[in-house]
Structure formats: C-alpha cells, structure tokens
Length: 435
Figure 1 (cartoon, rainbow, N blue to C red):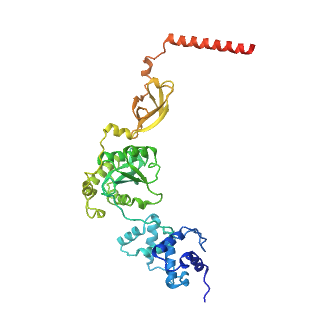
Figure 2: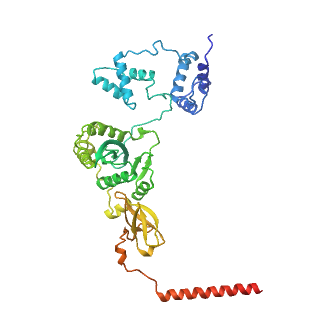
Figure 3: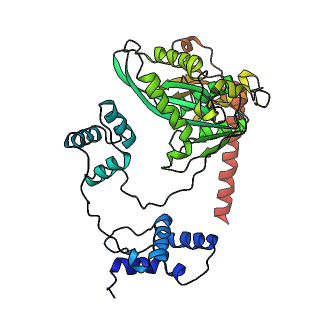
C-alpha cells in the first residue's frame, strides 16, 4: 500500500463528516458541504484558509468513485505548454498589458478581428501561466445568482454612474460622468445625463428628472458609493415613498442590467460620437435623442424581441405618477443647512454673505438650498414651511436703510429697574454680613 500524501490526508479530514456516514440524502450532503465550507483550515502549501463548497463537493465525489488515492493532485504531462503560436502569444500579452482590465472575451474578439482563433480556456490558461489572469482566487466562495425581473414597470429602478469621456469645456479639460436610471421590467432609461461629477447633487438631479418624466418607482437599487449613502438622497426617497436598496459591496452582478447598459452606451454611442461634439450640452442633446429614437425603440433580446418603450407602455395603467404640485415636489429635493445669524442679520454660505430678516439676529435657522445652483432659496421651519427670505447682502443699499431701534422709554425703564434690583441685592448682602 502506498503512503498517502499530506494533501490527500488533509482533504480526507475535510470530508470527515461525509465519509463517516452512509446513505446520505442529497439534501444532507449539500448541508454538510456548506457547513464544511464555512470553516477555516490550515491548508498544506497554501496561505488560504477557506475552501469553497464546489471544491469540497468535487473531492467528495472523487473519493466516493475512486477512493482516497484520487484525492492526490496528479501533475499534468503538458503543464506549462500551450498550442498558441508565438505570434498569438505575444499579441495576447500585448493586449492584456495594454489594458489590464480587458476581459478574455474581449481579447478573443480582438484576436478574431485580426484573423486569429483561440479558445477561452486556452487563453485563460496562458494568461494564468504568465500571472496576468484576474481569476487568481478560483476557490473563492461563490454566490448563488438567479435571473429575475420585476413584474411591472416602475417596480424597480437601478441607478449607477459610468466614467465618461474628457471634454474641453471653456478652455479646460473636464471629465464627464454618465448618471443613469433604468427600469428593471422594461430596460427603459427613465433618465440619463452626462454630469461633471458623481456627487449627490448630480444623482438627485437625474432622479428628479426621471420622476417628472416617468413617475415614482417603488424601489431604487443603488451601490454603496458616497453619493448614494448621502442623507439628502435617503430623505428624498423616504418622503416620496421609494424603498432605497443598497447592493452588497464588490458585487456588480447585482446590477447586471444597468452594467449591460453601460457597455451598450460605450460601444454604440460614445465610440460613434463625432469629435466636433465636445461640450456637455451638445453631448447630452445627442444622448437624449439617441436614447429616444434608437435605444428605446430597438428590439431587446432580454425582452423577447420587444423594445423597451413598447414593454414600458404596457404598464401605464399601474404606474404611480407624480401627483403633487410642482412647487411642493421641488421642495423635496432642496438641501437644508443650519446657520447662526450674525448680529447684523447676515449669514455666510459658500463664502458669500446673505441677508435675512433682522428679527432672526442671534438665532439658529434652517436655510433651504437649490442643489443644482447651490444657492439659498428661503428660511424654513422644522416642517419645511417658508418663514423668511434670504437675499445677497446689499451693503451699499443698507447705508440709507432705516434702522429699527427700541423705544427709549422702555429702555430707560428697564435700566432703572435693573439698577433698583442691584441696590436691593447689595442691601441683602450687607445685612447677612452684619449677622
């Protein structure tokens, strides 16, 4: 009998709860495998401490069919070899090093365009041998994923940001970010816009435009970026009755449909954009025209050949429209800040002085801000009711402004009363000293 290697003995110990029992049901096998996958191990010749449930399952069925000796790694006779020609090998390395984020599928497509044919597994093994494969954690725990789709339009919206092109705006190079909102059931883009940043202001503006055009969604799925966890977005969704849902970190598959939209916009819009179109206004104008006239009306594979607009139109009767007055709707998207009013009835916002009613001097107030312009609108109470104005300080105009002054008689009366109280207090202190 051959001596078993440390690797075989280790794998057998992992399979212990499975090998020690007979007549296990399929459900019991799956349950035990999942339990073993949750444990930490001291794996021989490895720095890892976890083993995926798929790996344990593979070991189990190898042991069951071929015995304990099958748990030993058998070296491949052609390890390190590849059938790729030297020219193709060099081209693959060149394509990968040129853009490390380039996928194997894209490399194969680019090779095919150049007249070369290569299998996915062959390219993957070659990149892995050259330590250029992104799949270095092949045994990492996997997550069960299932295809799903909302029953009706506006049941679920997705929001995400894509890094866009760099343009020359007013003599300065500025990067654009595409902020998009997509309906899950129809793949319709409820609104999308190229913005100069990916801040909460940009995302809330796109959401506001989307609701004005397409109604109110029941759920909004976003990632954990700083802009999406802002209190302002949470407040907006809460007041509109939108359930805000956050994807788990580092799981872009949770928003696969809008990620596919990003791929479409890169391949079919940005790459075809004329170099003469180089301002934010021009790019957005062409984007909205392209979405309305091409994307929304084109057959979609995920919709069984229907266009997004056709699928969305089927649910018009169940879509919740925005019924409140436009003024009240805009107030929901205001930002609020707290300021203490100076003695001269001024406050400072973004290094600009503003005037407020003089009666508020020395008090703390809530100022409503228009996010798109970052300018104050009014003063509000705790229920968002307008209670006062805010205007840019007019120092020259205030030169001739009539001042409010307290009544002289009232002032003298108060001074006399205060003086009398002081005398009485001194008399009480002197009497206590004499005692």
